[in-house]
Image 1: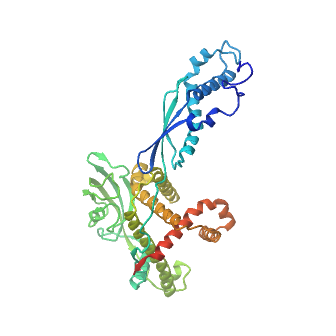
Image 2: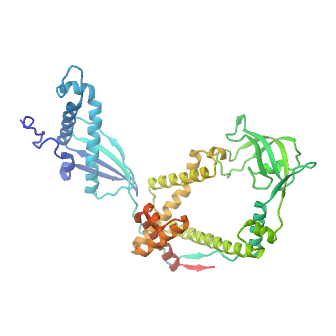
Image 3: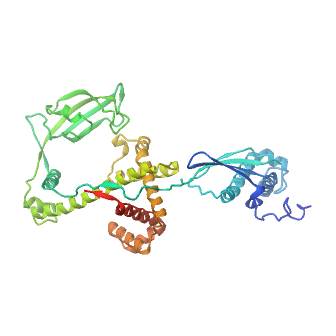
Length: 448
């Protein structure tokens, strides 16, 4: 009778809001398991009448839309629909049941997930409960302590004459010209053009074959020990040798392994460095002479040392508070941070016209390299967030304006344009983290 009147199984009109959206309290059963400090396992059981209603809705909608040979639109028997579309209908119904009930279950249990749930579905059967499980992460509760009165040491930021001399030497090196030399062998600090191939055992080293490879013969060039093998070779000389790569080498694919090389020296070039005088400073552009260059370098070095000192101070703070306040970090937070770091690396290399494969890197080993630093960064951010919350720190209008002005200056854009790209919600965590860090430093005992 209900069907004849255009009503659904429960007496409400078809198209009326699904009864699933009202499953709360004793009509929907929930059970929550604390897997660990951040992971929860939620089991939801939905009553048979809700399951049956959604199945009926699904077949009724399907009957109106589907076109089957031998049947007029809307006249295909239910048995035929079940024969052809049962799997599809079950998938759609399960999706609706989960999507409708999951938010209600979270609201009922006062849960605030920070990750997408991993759904484990049960069996859908007419006349029976439908049960599914959702596994998700939440933010840990951090009762932060020990952040006042930290004993810290600030690195010296004084710029010495040696510091300036090293900077000038680096500038001279960057402006050096290369002159091909003959009649002698390779010396330290020469530049050479070589061809080489490399193997680990009988297998070629990925990305380990180079042609016309220009390198400076210094201690830190290419692989450890490689430059030393070139010293004493002449133009056209060939040499085969094996290097034992240190266990702690950054590239895990070759760390602790023996790599065999076959090298041919094609050219030897001597580096001709310019004299450090007024003309050299003027040629760099923007300097009136050598003294002006030294003064500007001192200012840059001062700022750099301050940044390094501040960074070191932050690391001391995070190390101390992480030890005083152990907590589990949500894996989803770390995963997102790793992805951001990998994206930044790809964009940086792309801007330089370099591919990761050229550096012997893959996305897989880059992911592994970023795991530890990503976890550390996430933990540090959560520590500062906890301090800001406990101290009742707030982001004020003047804080937002100051940050927008910093970005505008950094990217040489109008403040209005920056505001169009960066919302206040994006800036708020940064502002609160800085305020929390400033608070900790203000309360710390710092020695130089």
